[in-house]
Image (cartoon, rainbow, N blue to C red; front, side, top):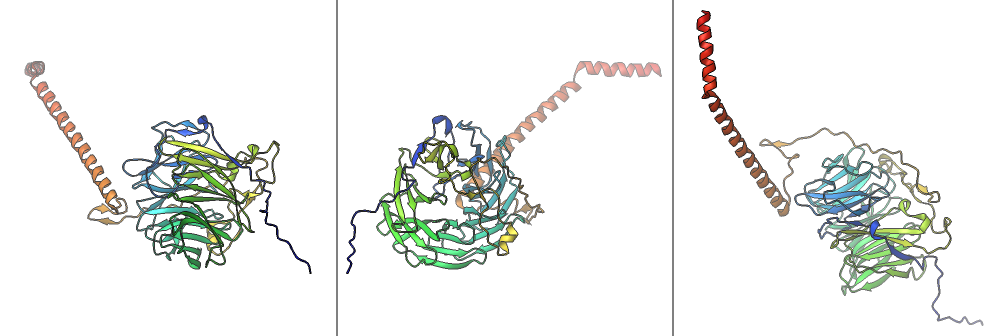
Length: 494
C-alpha cells in the first residue's frame, strides 16, 4: 500500500506580476488648481480616456465638470471653461468607450445629458448638451455605457429604477424595476449580456438586462455588499463591503450560484468605501479605499487560493476618487499595465499613478499585453436590443494606438415639446425636487430680481438726464434767436 505524504510547506506560485509597483507622475505631469467637488456621494467624480480628463468640480448654483486634454498637465487656469448645463450637482460622469469626444453625465436634477467635447478641449463654457434624457422621477446617481454596443446607456436613479436608453432615438427602451432601495453599483460581463447590481437592501442581483429578469439573487447577511465587479470571462463576481463586525471585506462569488460566496476575506477595520478595479488582461484586482492613501493589488486565479496578494502602493495623501485610463492610452514602452488618476481634494490635485511591470528589455512584451477590447463597437443599439450578444472587438497594442475612429455620434433631432400651465413651460422650467434645489432657485430668483431692479433704476436715471437735456435745448437762447430769425425771413419773403 502506497502512503502519500503531505507537504506542509506553503505552495509557491511564480507570477510575472508579483513585482508590479506604483509610480507617481512627476509634478509637471500632475494637474493642479482644480476645485474638486466636496460632494459626499460615493462615486469617483472622475473619468479618463486617451484624449481627455474630466473632473466634477465645486460650483455654486447648478452642477459642473471640467474637461482637460490629458497632455495639458500643470496648473489649470481658475477660469478654465466648464461644462455647466445641469441645474443640480453632477453625481457621475462616464466617457463613451467608442466615441472619445462623447461624455455622459447625471445629476441631482433627475436628468442624464450627453455632451460632445470638441478636439483640443473647451474654449468657452458649454451649457447646451447634444441630448437631454428625462425619465427618472428622482436624482440620478449612476450611469454606465454598454461594453459592446455603441448607443446603449444605463442609468440608475434614487427612484430605485434602472433605465436603458437607446441614444439613436434618444428615448428609454426598457425599465428594470426589481430593486427595493437605492442602487449602489452596476457592472457588466464582457459581452454585456448580464448585469450585476448591488443595492442598499443588502442584496446582490444578477439580471438579464433586456428582459429585466433576475437570474440570481444573494441575500447578504454576513457581507453587506457595496460594490460589485465582473471578473472578465471567469464567470466570477467580486464584491466589496462590510462584515457583521464592521470590518472591510471582499467576497468572491460564482455567477451560476449566488447562494454562498466562494471565499470571504477581511481587509482591515477602516470605514472608507472600497472601490474594486479589475484588469481582465492581467487578471489583476486593485482595491482602493475612499479616504485611504494606499492601493492594494491581487492576482485572481480560477484555483485556490483564488486571490493571491501581490503588493500595496502607499501614499500619504487621501484619495476622494480614482479615474482609470483605458488600455489603449497606456505607455506600452514603459511596461505600464494600469494607470490611475487620483483625486486629492485638499490640494486640488489630480495625480497620475502608473502600475508598472519591471522589465529590462525595451521590446514589446506580448505576455503582459494580450489582445484587448478596442474602440470599435461590436453591435449597434438595435442589434443588441433584438437579442444578439457579441464579444468586444479586440485590438493589439503592439504598434501603439494610432488608428483613428471613424465613427460619428449623431444625436437624434427632437421636436421641442412644451407643457404650458398658467403661462409657464414646465419642461423649460423644471420644478425643484429637493429643499436644496428650492433654496438655490430662490436665491437665483432673488439675484435676478436685484439685477432687474438695478437695471430699471439706471434706466430711470438715464430718462431723467435725457429729459433735462431736452428742456435745456428748448430753453437755450441760441435756439430762440434762430426761431426769431426764421420768422423774420418768412415775413420779408411775403
